[in-house]
Image 1 (tube, one colour):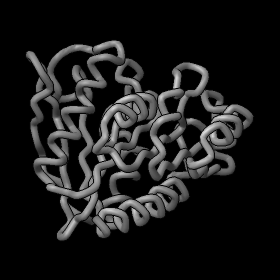
Image 2 (tube, helix red, strand yellow; image 1 turned 135 degrees about the vertical axis):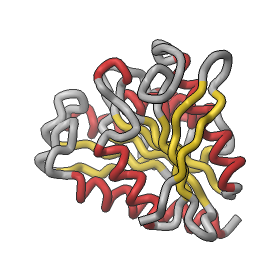
Image 3 (tube, rainbow, N blue to C red; image 1 turned 90 degrees about the horizontal axis):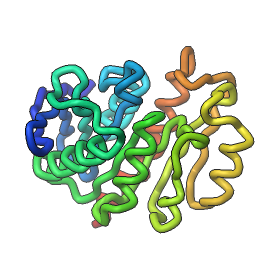
Length: 214
């Protein structure tokens, strides 16, 4: 396991973000990981977030997970999705500066998947995305139309916020997205964290290879 170090990231006026950074030796790529909705108990220690961090770090990626404003040790208050986009951008800046990787990526789980998609689609530096349990009925993911980078989308067959039929239409709309359907998993991936990590690790190997060629 790659050790993480505690960081405090500047997140704009009166906002400082609690974060954890891991930089494996020789990392050629790095990923920021966004947690679920702050108002429903989401934080960077969520088991799904931690599993993705561990899987990516094990494949040699630099990783940065953080708490959105108003969560845990992060100052400020919930930003209605707008402030959280600023937080994710601050995390990408920090990862680029601290790790110096050639390829940047962003991942997110649930609400964090929407934040990752919006921020990643607008940032030319972002060369990979992971969208875990994207709540397709709650948020618009149309921005992905213009972001054809290595993208993994993960959903469980028992997820009421990402129903199988909606997920199939979503991945058909964006055929460059690599889907991973985890049988029996619900929105929280109880008892299904291992296959989630396997999917994230395979994506990480692809991103790392891309970083090494640049």
